[in-house]
Length: 164
Image (cartoon, rainbow, N blue to C red; front, side, top):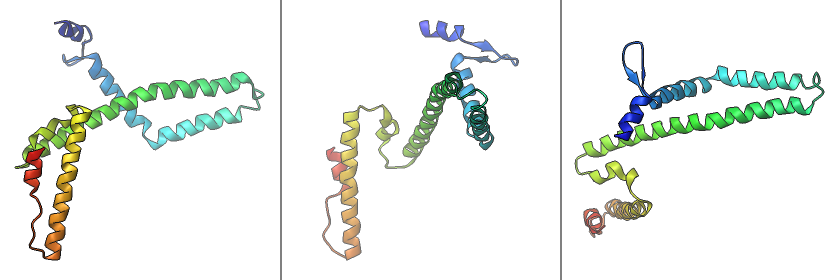
């Protein structure tokens, strides 16, 4: 109930009548800013600012204030960009997780529990990783034995998966 009230309080009606939450507005802002800051022209603008700052050094006598201008400016930009970059990375990671989950679910015989493994505890992930490491080792042995033409058959990967 409190979440619904908070969501309504942060909604803004757009010109076409759709409501946008503060999170959606921030996400759109972060995407746009990420796109703009990743452009070569933006990089050249930043280089130009630094060059102008450096050239004005003699004009201001390389004073403490002159140095403070660039230090403060870069600190503020860096501080704000950290949050925008994190938002972009979170969204990208989530998109990759959704795509991988779709592939896992679509592949017949795949372990569907892997579709949401990012929600597992670190211990569960370690156990799962060890299980897949064992299965990869067995698969390698199977491949090597086929290449060598040996008749011996190593342990089944399905048995290993069932044991874990």
